[in-house]
Image (cartoon, rainbow, N blue to C red):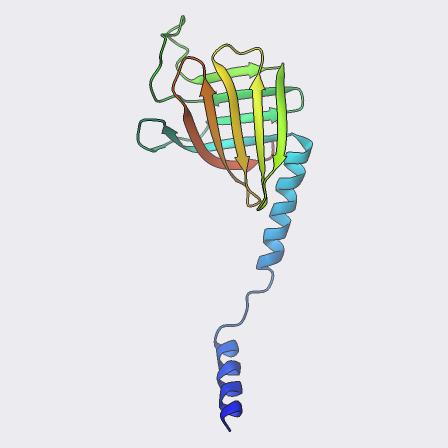
Length: 163
C-alpha cells in the first residue's frame, strides 16, 4: 500500500510539472554554433559591461566590440581606468585598433569553452587580450596594456554580420 501511494504521488508530480522537451537540444545547438564560430576564428565579441581594475562595473551602450577573423583583429572598445602615460593623440582614448599581425592561441577549458589569447604585434599600447568564451555564447575579455591599467569586459559572442 505504501509503494502504491508513493507511485501515485510520483505520477501526480510528473503530471503537474512535465519535463521541458527541446530545451537541451536548443542548448546543444547553440553550443555547436559557438564551437563552429570559435573553430573558424570568425566571430564578434559584443561588450555589454566594462570593469576597470580599480573601479566599478559600467554598463555600455550598443556598438562596442572586438571582431576576430583569421587575417585581422579589430577592436572598438572604450577605456575607463588609470593611464600611466598620456597618449600622443588626445583623441585616442579607447582601445581602438586594427591588427593584421598577431598571435592567436586557443586553449580548451576543462569544463567547456575556450581561453583565447591574442597578442597584437603591430599595436603599441596593447600587450595581450585574453578572451574566455563559454559554451552558451557568453564571454569575458581582459585587456592588458603597456601604458594603462587592466580592464575587463563581459559580453556575448556572435557571428559577423554581412554588410
